Image 1 (cartoon, rainbow, N blue to C red):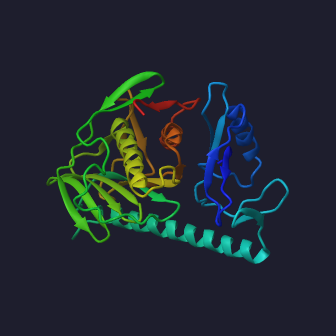
Image 2 (tube, helix red, strand yellow; image 1 turned 90 degrees about the horizontal axis):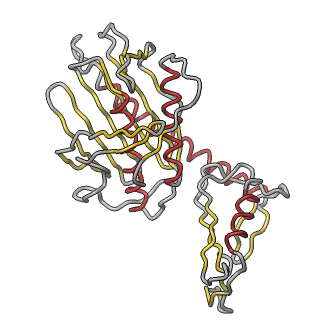
Image 3 (cartoon, rainbow, N blue to C red; image 1 turned 90 degrees about the vertical axis):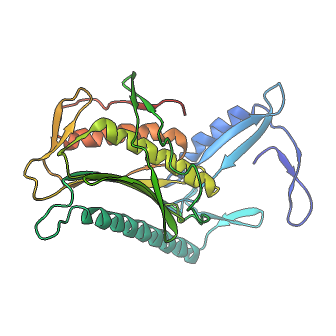
Length: 330
């Protein structure tokens, strides 16, 4: 934070405010300068807070733990904080951070593979009998492991349960009501919210490390609707908001993976109904789309638009320009 005078105690603490003139202008210049950091720090926020009518105030920095560390400044050094100073990292420190980042990436990869294996088991069948015909999953894994308290019995974790989700698709409003989650059960280091009947089901699993898993499966149809998928992707991102706020890291970066599956005993391609109920086909189902990521809430709209582009490209459509999707009411 800039604009706060430190005390002379050891270690120093925040003292009185010493307003910086035109704090918003300074914050904007610092944000532009941060673009030179290599690689960029996702989720880095720099903003001014006015404390006087003349526009003077303080500049606040929010720097999340990075999934791409170490980072290099324009002077080609990577820096580390030592007490009250930032000093260049030694080669050994750079190697240690690089190895830690690699281990974090391997952990995330393992969690995605675990989610995919669990999802695939829904479509395995027993003695030639299909368990489910079609379905999809959305898995969100945090860049940094959270340490959440026990989740079973905690209310309000899954967002928008029994409420309409409103989005703008190319400025056209769309309301979707998700399936209510009526049952809950404890998991090891997690909790599951679900709704199930004989031929279909929907489930949310949330774990104390911050991971969020969604699954939908059905044996009664070979069609899905893009509206359902968009609605659940929104509900996953908003559930992530609840989870990372509970963990005290509201802008923590998450990676998101979306997989579509159909049982091999179903000969038809997975049919998707588009916005105007036009029929699209995922001829290559099962299919896992390229992973997406988001940090602050302001990046959710971009995630929705990127998903739409990837999905319709996977269906082989001739859509030329990306469709803009915006979540209403955030």
